[in-house]
Image (cartoon, rainbow, N blue to C red):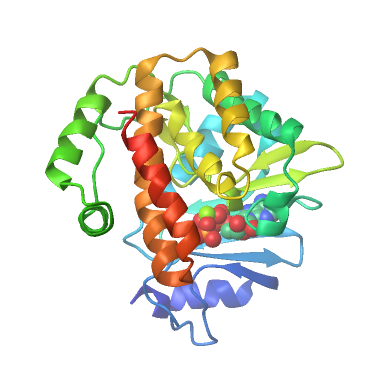
Length: 295
Ligand SMILES: Nc1ncnc2c1ncn2[C@@H]1O[C@H](COP(=O)(O)OP(=O)(O)OP(=O)(O)O)[C@@H](O)[C@H]1O
Ligand SMILES: [Mg+2]
């Protein structure tokens, strides 16, 4: 098991760690408490930098994040104000990334922070994500035009939504094939990975493990879905802002709806099973049918 790797152990012990941030919790002997979690351990150092270490060899996403910081952000200096500065990295046997710690910004990951969202900030968020898509010109990452559906998603689809996975898959692959919007996307705009400074009205984005080429809609969906259960009023504003500013046609919105449906399947399961929040689960289920009917 990689966590018992001596080099990794020596490396982690050599760091001046101020605070453990995320990933599998490691004890002194570097044994995992939970084996199946994130492939990274993230620390804040005494020098105020963030160190993200790849601890699971099976995880391929590290390469994408390195590529993002070393190549894409270098070629496109205009995006540098939205991301942490790269300090150091190693892409060899011991793989890690050291980036600037963004102080005075809060992640949107908590309910308290999501509550502070207002109209201006929402528009700013949409604009910031959009800048990523359009300021970054062609690059050489290639992804195929199909969407893989994990077995776990298929099971949930049948169990909770009473939908035949075969029909679902066919529909989705048809839509992905005719998807004409292909831009650089950050790939995972989970609210935890959006940092906000309310005084400066500024936003920074972190975590590029899933960046690549895709339909830009994929960067907007999770954010909308996280806002919706609390702020139904934002759905209209959000969709209108996107429609007004960016004039996407059908294939953008179909992929958008698919992605919302996908996330509903996962979130429905997550909330229902893990948080036993039946009310929210019902709401997410309704959202699934609304967005699914649009494709
Ligand atoms: N440059 C940064 N400045 C401030 N905080 C950061 C920075 N980078 C990461 N963090 C904090 O560390 C957390 C984890 O970072 P990141 O998302 O890059 O790693 P991860 O392995 O994908 O973790 P997770 O599975 O929790 O998303 C972030 O949610 C954020 O709170
Ligand atoms: Mg992350």
